[in-house]
Length: 311
Image (tube, rainbow, N blue to C red; front, side):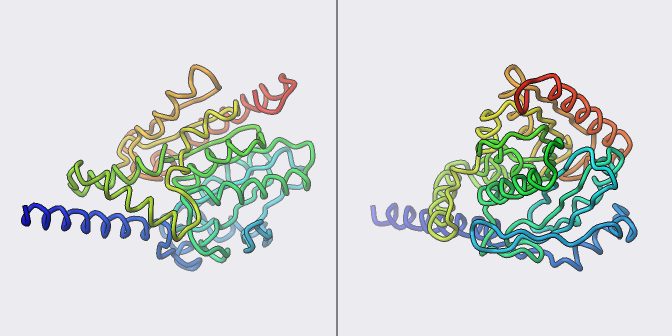
């Protein structure tokens, strides 16, 4: 009995340590600085220096007491607004590769750093929970600055989860594009534990420990982070994009969201062959941009035919 009790205590302690470790890696990550993210994009061929020459610095005070910082690019005669959300540990530089889509459509581009990322403030990352509420403020600001123009959201990875979680906040937009989002944060954690060959018997206690730590230190609940649940809160047209070679957040996460929505709300799913995490655009920029553009045009056309925001 003593040996069994000792083994149980060891397993419990191990689960707590691992749970806290994975929670800290996400909510208090070591984010890349702006110089690093800029160089990463340049070296990957995602953009050139002149691609941001027409931007101006932009900032907004969050309702949570910190400043969000980014850039705004405005064409001479705007026909819409696109708000772009980057992924975990990155910065708005990660969205520049998508800008051509919106520039060709004469859209205003608003790209900014999430809380705790880049040069924005905030004491921790929240997997899209606080980020979605910041996004609500950004959308409201864009709507007041560009009244009457269609507004759409696009996000990558955690940014994709953020734009999906935005849907539970009651402010409809005209379209949403989510590239490689997770369907739930708990599901993403469970996948990472499985990849590391953590036995399923321990995965529940580990996630419980992560949940406890997050609730205590980061101001939100792991259970709150559910893009799949939020996706059913609005009828906004959604395009989900995922690489079939993504081993970080598998394509099944986007498929789960798609399967929930497809019979009820306008939803598309684009699976890109051989693409890894946040890699779909690189596998064929022309095809990717064509798919996104055609989706946006159809969503806006449907919006014009509808009497209410979204359709």
